[in-house]
Length: 348
Image 1: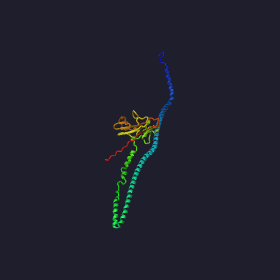
Image 2 (image 1 turned 180 degrees about the horizontal axis):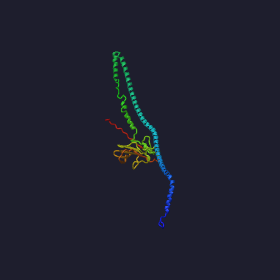
Image 3 (image 1 turned 90 degrees about the vertical axis):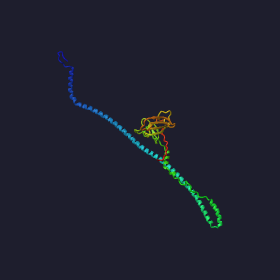
Image 4 (image 1 turned 60 degrees about the horizontal axis):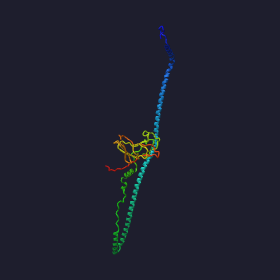
């Protein structure tokens, strides 16, 4: 500011500035030595925060790794139990086949032995009859030789009577046909006949239920042809398994050709396939891969329910079982066996 005489006078602001500059000169020597430490401390704090964040991320990753490892441990234990169970089941199935073959073998051997005994009894009867006739002829020959030594008149009289008796004697029967064991009856296409009987006596399904895809609510039967909703149970975790709904897949993958299967719905209170006027008890599914058609029928009434039209790549049968019944035991959903026919054709 200017005075009345026109000269400059120091203002309050300038005094404050000088004071601040003075204080700055006084403080700088003291702060100057600690400022790098303060800056370093701030940087260290940021680095510690980064390390803590990294530690947290690594811990989360470690948890994820351990979770996957526990899944593999559970799978390994499951496979050990499953392998032992499968070995027993496979042996049981082959034991059934061996028992079937043993019974068939014994049946054929018994039939052959019975025919052999019958043919033997028949041959022995014929031989006994022939032996008796031969012995009678031998006695007659001896008597004839004795009488031939008598005088001519007596011999001729007896000879006429004996000649009449000899004429009445039956001639030996020729050997009858069919006295030999019928070899062809037992060996003709033996393996094929037994196999064909085996085919008609065993059940075959177009596919099985895949237990590795079954959600925790579902229990698949030992023969893999029926599944029941028993309520949720903990299952080994694997990528193929359904986890959010009681569903599972069939074992086969279809990508071409025509395929048909039937499903016995039993008394299931809920299942998913389409909207129908009445709940069928047996459902028939027909898949035409090339035509792009998936059709559903009531297998008992042969009534068409619905047909989907789509382009199919590789597809697998899918099944959903609704909630459990409260008025009775759990009802299974079952794959119906195939009706097997054997077509015979000449080779070439």
